[in-house]
Length: 65
Image 1: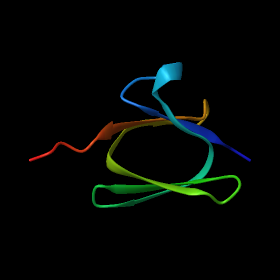
Image 2: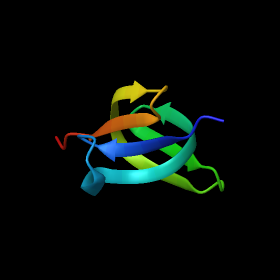
Image 3: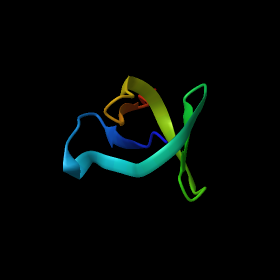
Image 4: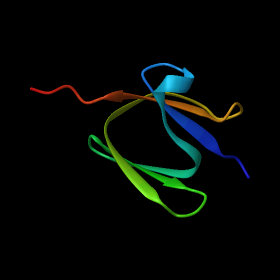
């Protein structure tokens, strides 16, 4: 099983949003992250990068208009 750690902006320990993510769903600017225990977290923004072999996903906050 491939689990991911999700970061905001850059891959730094202080920017971790969620760990052990098994599922990512995107609907517009809403990104729903589901962890191994089934807990869902919703984030408003976009996916900047996803390195699946390293289990790293980086998100960027939606810009306020």
